[in-house]
Image (cartoon, rainbow, N blue to C red):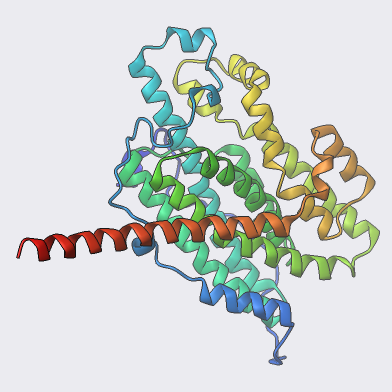
Amino acid sequence: MTRDLYRHDPGPSVWEVPATGAARFSWDYDEGRERLLALYQKGKDKQWDGTKRVDWDLEVDPYDPLGVPDENLVVYGTPYWDKMSEHNRRDLRRHYASWNFSQFLHGEQGALVCATRIVEAVPDLDAKFYAATQAMDEARHVEIYSRFLHEKIGMIYPVNPSLRSLLEDTLRDSRWDMPSLGMQVLIEGLALAAFGMLRDSTEKPLPKQILAYVMQDEARHVAFGRMALREYYKQLSDAELRDREEFVIEGCYLMRDRLRGEEVLADFGVPAADAVELSERSEFLQIFRKLLFSRIVPCVKDIGLWGERLQRAYADMGVFEMGDASLDQLMAQDEEIAEQLDARRFAAEEAARTEEVTRTIAEG
């Protein structure tokens, strides 16, 4: 059972977030916006089965599931690391991988709930169409991350309090655009950057497949958020835009400063104050923090949230220059990497079948 795998008590089995807001019906059944309908068609065409596309027969060492360098660990090179036995270090790698993929899992369930909220609340039928395909994508992502944690790592961490807080703020807001802003721009933008760092640094085939295939879906989700919000935000007053910019600023600081895996360090006897200090001194974490915003900053600028206070916040975080990055290029790269993995896998399977036929013929 899942609860047996939790490292800490996650609390009640069901987390209820009281929500307000209207369910909106549209009686306008015209064809809708061409670009959004094209994205909806792509969402239908690109559906896939996680039990078939992912090669679950691949072996995974639960004590080194990602194969990333130990230098990436916050405690590496510290007295805490020096005191650890090799057994403790292997266990630490497992815990960090579990924590990372657990937050991916919880975030994807948040995305699933937000996608259904968008279907309910968005006023335009073409946007409801696309959001329905996203809900299916998110269900698949929850399924895949859950299976990886259950079958390959055997350990799950509860949702990080800061991620939980951002999910709650996103879902409590009654305005129809806030689930899209909170999820598709902030949470999924952060997730994409984290997925991408792991996808590009791991040589372990199973997690690499999972991350690449999920990112291929997420590229469409961000595109949908950009289309829907860019058009809507052109109609808002300066005061309404400032309110949404405040939400973005608070969410970005929350994720940058608190999504650090300190729960893992606590499990290995590192006091909370030391965990914070080690995180602040970690060169890898500083690089990771900046890269976390590589998908968010250009998206926020693209949808029209680029007021003076928001720009100052991004300058303070050291990520202001990322506003000029090309999201289209990043998303095209995500698509290409997933397709290349498929091509290599299919080529290997075809070569194995050819070898088997050749061997059978030779054996008479």
